[in-house]
Image 1 (cartoon, helix red, strand yellow):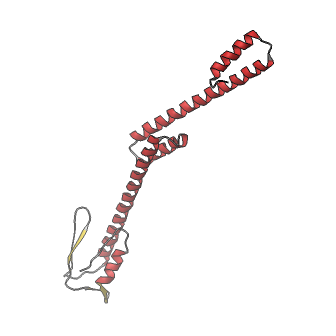
Image 2 (cartoon, helix red, strand yellow; image 1 turned 120 degrees about the vertical axis):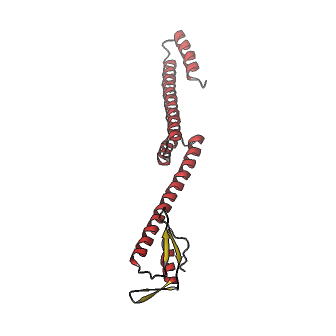
Image 3 (cartoon, helix red, strand yellow; image 1 turned 30 degrees about the vertical axis):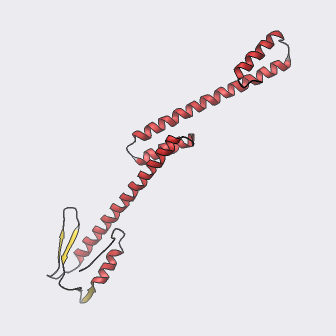
Length: 178
């Protein structure tokens, strides 16, 4: 037996010319044709998969969005899980996407904290000894306080309580009320 279907068919067709009525030779030739056609179809499909993977990688490299690149690379890896280039690019773009999402969440948390502080400052009645500044980016800078307690609606509010409330916000790492 030979591994090459074409070579085997050549031999079988040569034998059939010598003995065209041999049923066993006809059967073997038919089986080899089917195997050859199946192999050709598998090779065509494999080439098509390789082309799709290459196109997905090319599009992913050109993609400006990490999210779309990751989606393209997932499709490529579904077609060829062993493709090293697709796998490495997928890992890199996925890490960048996670970093991008974390930064967006952090920015959202900072904006929420800024809005909360603006609201707190707007509601409080600070006495004349309190001083704060807001810069162009919206950050507040507290400049000073003459004592550690704020009197609000006949109630004393401790600086420690305000610090605890500020530290409870996700975008605030540290707070000091002076």
